[in-house]
Length: 268
Length: 288
Image 1 (spheres, rainbow over the protein chains, first blue to last red):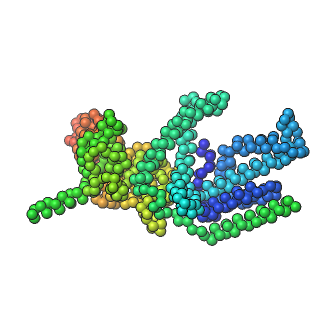
Image 2 (image 1 turned 60 degrees about the vertical axis):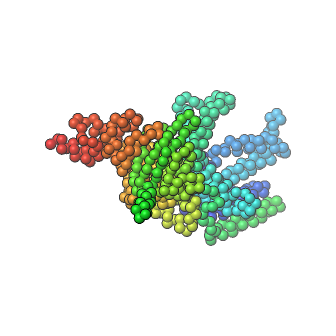
């Protein structure tokens, strides 16, 4: 369970680490948006190249990204299989019964897989290089205008920061409880679906009880350290755009322009 | 007339020297179980008080009552002469820092520095002043080199030292440690106790320390030991006096500190409690 990388931050001093979290969030957002326009192998190649360059720039071992992909492996496989079997069109490669594997199906399946992998890689870059508090700070800053219409942005961002902070902790706890259950003869990986689902219950109950206890303790610790509400607080990490952020935005602009150029050319 | 003015001043000084005063405190878990009934305790400013008792004796509840995290049924709690109430609770809390038992459940920030900053942010300290305050606080507990570490890269003892730094950054006059070493390994425990002793040396009478523990080897380091059981004050005095009451301690489910245990088993017995060094001396005298 330790290998689940979603939301886990690894400190470092790479160029990407030092970018303003708002820059990273905007880049991630724009990137994913643009990528949804991709429709040819050329455009997918270009978006993949962009991510590979970014991954290189983070200066982290590739294993960390691989670990980020693993948990959604089954989801990817499921979607790929659906695409393979249910995309109509010609030519048909082979068929059995009502199911037909077509060439457009194969192409779609590959595209969907690439799309999934790229989205996960991109968000892993964000969470891997940005401390959760900075992500929350960035969100608060980016969503700042919403305060005017009465949305409690500061509270929400603090909630998010704390939630992210507790993700690895609860993962570890799940592993611990699983081991404790396994050592008493419980099996999570044998038997039919009903038996497996039942095996989850004695895992969830202690996990929930533990999480509630943690929440109560944390609330006490926060109150004792003078927490009243999230609005009336100053910030330790002050966000300010640097030269590198401008550079990053220029690079993003370049990426977007080249993307649409490639897209147009591929069409012709 | 003159006399009464003098008397008033005297009272004022006495109140100022009183870090915590608890008067006729009454608190129930629920309608059937009474924990505290007419509980009284005074803690002088600058003292290191160890509050000991076995599990469920009410010692952690007492800490929560002092901080206003839970409400008492009746009675009065004053912190530096200020009576605890809904209106004063935030001001009272500014003067008290607390380190809790579970190192993970009190780590709010994503990194060590962020965690220390949390309290400062609540206090609305300007951002530009924070790095210096954070550095100073971390230096006191010897964690200055871990500023950018995440909690899962730290040992339990290190996390508790960060928790202590988070509290120190807020410059409280009173620090309460609620079983802060209970979940640590012996090494972690030793570093925390060492850190506390350093704190006491550094701040002296400026800082009132209350350590809540069931580990008697920790209680021995304090200036004063208060033993409670079922919300009752059982013993109160200097460690040497308290620890010479072997039988009462045992009756209240407390293990004796190792040295004390040894002294209790010895024949002939030394007169009263001796600390480790004194005991060694006493033993070597016997040999002669």
